Image (cartoon, rainbow, N blue to C red; front, side):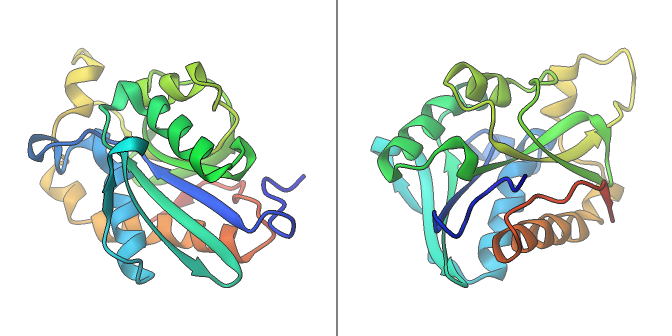
Length: 198
């Protein structure tokens, strides 16, 4: 069953998860922001606008015949659900027309997996979405694992910056996320089922 019935609803909301603030730039937990920035740039979206009432930075354009709204919550990660709820209510978008791009520690760096719904897998941003009634969104899960030291606290690991080697692959990673989003927008509305690697 298609994730999105784009023929009847020509609007899609894509949310990247992360933490605001310069100290969080380049960290593993902010890969959702980085991927959305790259997607916006490669598809000529207008400049981001800080919408305080929506608790997010927002930009939008039309790709094909689909209105695409991008959002980066300005809440912290563990309150992302507040922003998604505010944006979805404002634009009248149901969970079935929302895609969330986020980091996932249970997936190795270099792999991207997509699904609809599911548990939070320890991600506090997804946990917040579930708490606010948006657990059944589409998800583009970008691998950031495994931990370099298994005994390291997961919260500390995700807030570290990517390694030099990982950073050298960042353009490949964001390019693959962009390809997945473009395929979904221009295709039949289904996120790909296979694991993508780069």
